[in-house]
Every structure is written in structure tokens, then in C-alpha cells.
Image 1: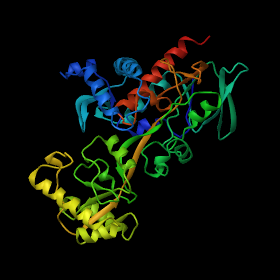
Image 2 (image 1 turned 135 degrees about the horizontal axis):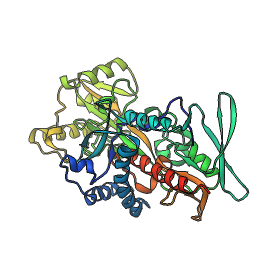
Image 3 (image 1 turned 180 degrees about the horizontal axis):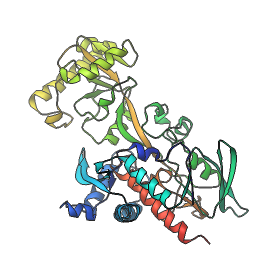
Length: 427
């Protein structure tokens, strides 16, 4: 087995992530007395996927159902076969059920880097060759269209690797402006704010397409909340206490939503802004914006009227929006339905408005596969010897909303199943 790694190090987007993997009904949950059911997870999945693009073709719930069963197997397999260890199992944000299994390493809790480090160690101990800084460039096929190897390159030049099986695990294309413009133009220009690994530029998808792979319809981005283009403003990414308004000077969403939903709301909004004041709780955010002024990315005003004029939004509408919001804070009854604990008055001048953008961590897209993660053509026929997993083939599970802990779990589970089938069918 040879692993070709485009970057100088292994891990990709998983190493940059929190590394939590969702699964329900695991022995690790049972050991901690956590009561959870597959149906609970499925109900949440259906509820989330109904948000945005209601007429979408995906998810394929038969595949989601299979994934949930195999996720339990993978969660065990990581410990029993790879030698991984879990540090804690938690819920997250608006998903309170404790089904995210996080890494433990060297006696301490680790993130995605700990998970990928354990897998890297296991592979090297088993004698698997890992070639870093060696991107694959092209799939090799025979006269019948069967994949028989890859063309790659490194510092020594081009190399040809003949292979009985090829598994593509190159991720999505959240870092490719060309592919975003081609497939998801609504988020073109978002790469500079993406949390996806720099190597996720759709290489494998393009290579597979070139040999006849079918592409999933309706691609979308994996949202990670919101971001700005001003340094040191990362605190806004999942801050439910802030207020979002659009070019009409009106709120357009309950800010207390799952981070992927927040990203989608920002994509759909017209020129969205985040509003905050000069209260002590915002001191670091104020300092970051003040350091950037003057800038097109933020404005400041001594009153809501002045701030509206600086933003270029209707003054009366914006002043009314903020008056209504602050009244809701006082009464504890927000018109958008935000819980009282996240209702914080905006009443300390001067006031600030910060342009906000969708923050992504990947894409829902890729090449179509069967349940064994063999890549298929438009007519459903299998491209022999070619597999794809993770973000290479994840659209089947999602509409437009990410499920916490599912991306890393899907990468691991699809990789495990593809590897198993490849290994048992080499002839």
C-alpha cells in the first residue's frame, strides 16, 4: 500500500478540525451512562436537512441509515484495531445529545490532529509507505476504462504508480475558487476565510470526472458559522449574542442557530452586517475593528442613526430594528425567538457594524459511489478499481446543513469500507 499525500504532512482538514466523531449507541456511550438512540439522531438529521433547499434531491436516507450503523463499527474499530482512545463524549451547541467522541492522546484530550496522528502512527508501524509532497495528477485507465494506477509528481519529477486499486481521499474544493465558481457560485470568493485545509482544491474530483465519474448534483458548502475580513475577529464565528441585519436594516434570522445554518443564512442575505456596541464584553472586538479603521469592512457611529448612514441602509428601518431588539432584550421575548440568555442589549455608544461573510470548512459534493464506495458513471456502472470517500463523495448524506461530528466520521467510515472491499477484491 502506498499513500500519496499532496501536502508536506498528513491529516488534511481532519487534523485542523476538533476531531469529534458522532455515533449513537456505542459501547463508549453506554460506559458513561449516556442514553442515545439511532432514531434520535435520524430525527435530528431529517429536521436539519429540511432547512434550506426544501426540494433538494438529497440526502439519500437509505445511505444515511447505513452510515449510522457503520459509524458504530468504525468507532469501535478505531480503538480495537488502530489503537485510538477517546477522551470525552459531548454534545455541542444546539445539539445537546452526547454523541461526539473526541480523541485522547498521551493522557490528555486532543483534537483532530491527535486522531490523524494515531492513524499515521498505525500505518507506519504496519509498513505502509507514505509519500508526502507527492500529489496525484491523473488516473491511468486501460482500454476497457478500468483504473490501473495514477500519475503523480514530487520534487524528482513525474512518477507512474501501477495499482490494483485506487482510493481517492483528496477532500472537497472549499479552497478552489475555480471549482466554487463552477459549481457553487453563491460562495465564490470565500476561500480566504475557509477553515478547510489548503490542499482541498478538488483534485480527486477532477481526476475522477476525467475518467467518466458521475458528479453529485446540488453541491453546497459545509458551513462553520460566519467570519469577517478584519483580523482578530474570530470570536464572532458562533457568537449568538450578536445581531445580524441586511441591506434593508432589518434582522433576517435568529442568530441562535446551528453554525451551518448560520452560514447558509449569511449566503442568502443581502449585504449582511453584524451589529455590536462598546460594552466591556466587546472590548476585544472593538479593539480589532478600531485597529482596522478606516476600512470598507466596518463602520462606526455615535448613534444608530449615524451608524445606519455609514452602513448605507435605511435609517428609519435600522433604528426601528434596534429599538425592537433592545425592547425584546428588556422583556426577555425576542421577536426572532432567541433564548433570553443570548439576548444582550446593544445600548452603549459608539456602535459598530461589521461586514460578515460565510465561513466554510468544506463542501458537500464529490463523485457518486455505490454503498461500497466504488465510483460509478452516470449510467450507474462501476468504474472498476476506483473508490472514493470522505468529502470526495459526501453529498449523498446531506442537503445543505452539516451535522456535527459527521464529516470526520464519514471520512473514517467510508475509508474503512472502501479499504476493506479493495483489500478483499484484489484479483
